[in-house]
Length: 189
Image (cartoon, rainbow, N blue to C red):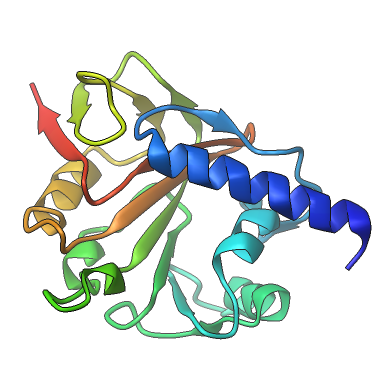
């Protein structure tokens, strides 16, 4: 690995941590050069999150082309949705599949999956969904263009038994990243 790649990975990791600590806020990833698949999944994000010790599932990867790219890039192995550590949804929807994802156990709540959504655009204001909880001063109403409207309800349902649940990351085509961790409460007006 070259020095520039190491610096980029460190910067990407710091951005990921800031996003997870500040739900509903948009942060900018370093300019990524490597993308996976036709939809442009930022490879640096996956390299920071995944390695040979975790598994992943890609919805609608019928030819397994993207799964093979992710495996080659991260060393992580593909798995079924029910057992995968990372779930990747390329079209802004899980089509209800999140209900079957692993949410951790009372003994190991951190065993819940992390969901990665590719969406069109992220903004910190203008959405109809209200977020509150750790890392949020009061409430925020982020706008996530390209996310199916039903996903917030499914996320709220799978995270209803905190500390069990799923952490969600949203990546847009402009290099933006936003998170909704399992500790965040999702409300719809």
